[in-house]
Image 1 (cartoon, rainbow, N blue to C red):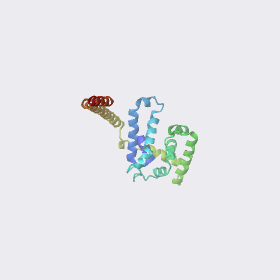
Image 2: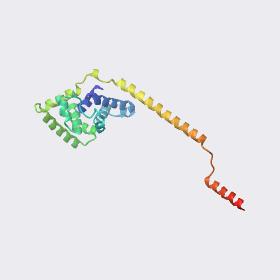
Image 3: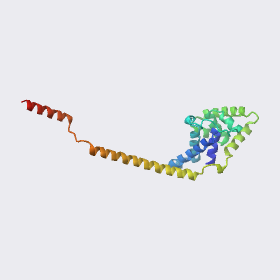
Image 4: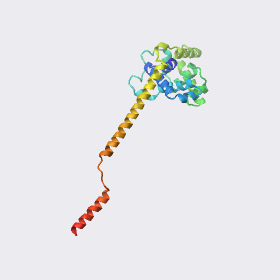
Length: 215
């Protein structure tokens, strides 16, 4: 859990969004466990959900989540935030988590060629933001930021499981309640609706009655 939160923080520079991204990923894991259990890389499954949620463009519309925290003055985090999102995620996977280009391409659903180009561009821009460090030093600094998290500051996985179970139970009760209310409303409307004959037959009967009266 703490690793995913730290990765999301490095990607966004926003602590609250990092917490939310990791919680979202673990909630998805719990609610989609049969699929996750069959996945050859469950950790990668959760990591992908964390990164995708953290970098979702919809967060730009949410007040307070569209800018980094004041505490994100770390030069490594600042350098990453200057990169486009796809480059940021690629360099995090390859240099921060030691994934190969092929593995990063699979996780980001991109071609190997595109991923290699993103990585090269990200490394060039990253070093431009940190001119006093070598390529190896910048990668080591990124690895340190990704893995340098305190366990005490993060939400525990068991709390995510409890929240997911509570959420599923609440949703089920809401669905059952809405269905029961709808059925009761239909029953009341059916019971109180007037019993009318066919309008066409009624008009024919009225015409016959009028004709009989004239005769």
